[in-house]
Length: 312
Image (tube, rainbow, N blue to C red; front, side):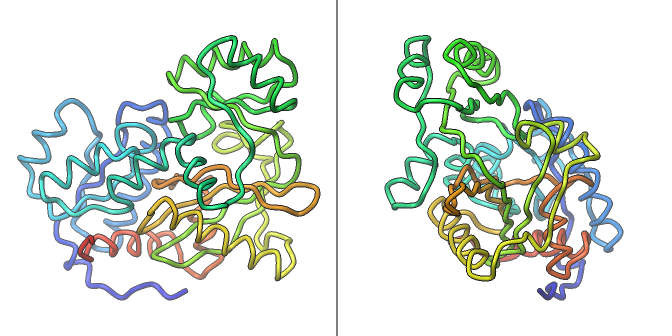
């Protein structure tokens, strides 16, 4: 994949928005620092804003030609920041208001995929102890519990019994009023990034943990990443096509990353789409970009270049 050749001066003054107040703040701080350094090294006139209560005043008071959004989770990845920038007339990176809000809501994303016949694990919404018992009867075990509007595997837990399901729902409810439980898919996990309409090489994930949780994503040194991913050419092509369809269904643009499981029969199951994926030294999109021939700086510039194009 070739990086677009753009004069850094064409971007004008770029605000890198990072930090924020979501449960993913610490990851966003690391992502933002890496993106800001890459932009400056490339000659872009970039500065950082750790998003807080003074954000509106900063956006109105600073000279800003465009914004690079590196906010993970609610308040930055859920459409609210995108909407604010739209109102202020500031071009920005990544998906728009609708796609950002939809992808942040795991339950509604799955409902959209189901309506289009795209495969996603059976699931249920949890709002009470009674819902937990009903889901246990309908879905069986094992199951995985997730806050519906969080990322980075925050608040997630694998459960093997009704008692554990109730406890996991109560814990997940600390992070989100809406909690999702879905059928556990036993098999390899893949993550696939998209960059400006192209599907990057899939990555196969391996971890000694029960699943690819927060520790495996950001802290562990024994998480395994395989590129090439080990699939046959036909199965990899199928996975790439499924990812493109899943992202198109949500309406993503610029860049995104989809997480997919494969069961024992070789079938793929869509889990979720991230519209502002991590950009830390452990992150997956930079890894996939390297496999496609782009270094970190080229990746950051390609993401930013999308903000030069008019939104439909």
